[in-house]
Length: 415
Image 1 (cartoon, rainbow, N blue to C red):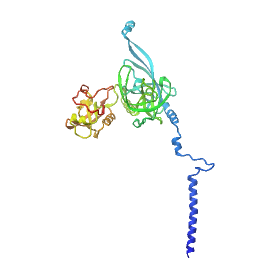
Image 2 (cartoon, rainbow, N blue to C red):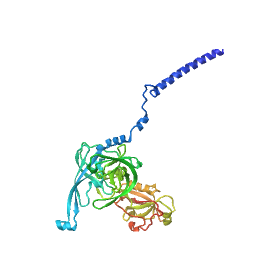
Image 3 (cartoon, helix red, strand yellow):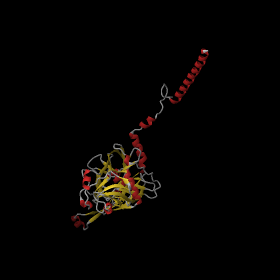
Image 4 (tube, rainbow, N blue to C red):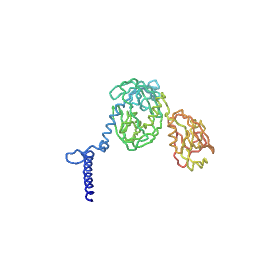
């Protein structure tokens, strides 16, 4: 009886083993074929696609994607030169007009023929004039252009070529807030009128501040610049600084003449915001095209609390107020505390500054303010940050206010 029961069980087990072995062989043939064994070619794996492309290949690809949309900008203009007294006597005139040609770079910004570049490339110095602007494309076409708008303080301008049928595609702009120190940076432009030149470096640092003096003697303070080791030379100005994917991370602007490997670019997020504003507001703007309130902001600390009597939690301290600024007109004073803007609470001066700069000139923001022991709501109509604004904490004459600035070496910022 026992044998009759065991035999069927053994048969079932044997059949199961055979079927299982067959299925395992079938699975192996479909999932591991070519992995090992003679005359077998190893399969392509995803890791090859990720690591098999060299940095050089990616740089070459980025340049190929980008260079057709990078242009040279030739500017014919004149400048009035004041003669010294001796020359005035000799020539019988006070000055002389000098004509010449300068050049820079730019890139296609949109489908309607707008080219972004530096303002100093396409605007005339004081007493001078621009007679002709020509955009030279990578295919050799020379197309007349005109200035749509320029922000002298931000050093960004938009020029336009009208009805150019062969306009290359607009370049994509990357999010410059997501850049990392040490990542590759590729500068493309026309240094010394050498067409389609490429230089390579890295993103060296962020939030640099530099001064530049125009030919007319006007000094502009440029803030929040990218520092790069990619060589930037005369003629590179206005050209794009791009990443591995050919996306614009900034526009080349300045080079430090006293040091090699130190160049500066305007971050792409700043460029995009200003360029769009300029297209909507044509003309030459003397300011920075950046919204501002006109106060010196600082973090709340013990020194500020001791001087003002503020015992609350949170908020951003107000140091000096710039005389005649939107903040001054709205009644803000040094020693006030901004608790919120448009209902959003703020504790960090930089965050509040960034919020203000994200707004448009002419917008109205509503600030909840603590002032001398009481709270009030203040409406401030944003103005345009003037170029080269300089006001320091503790100088009441700068702001015309009797409030005291933040103390104890706290961080301060000027929106």
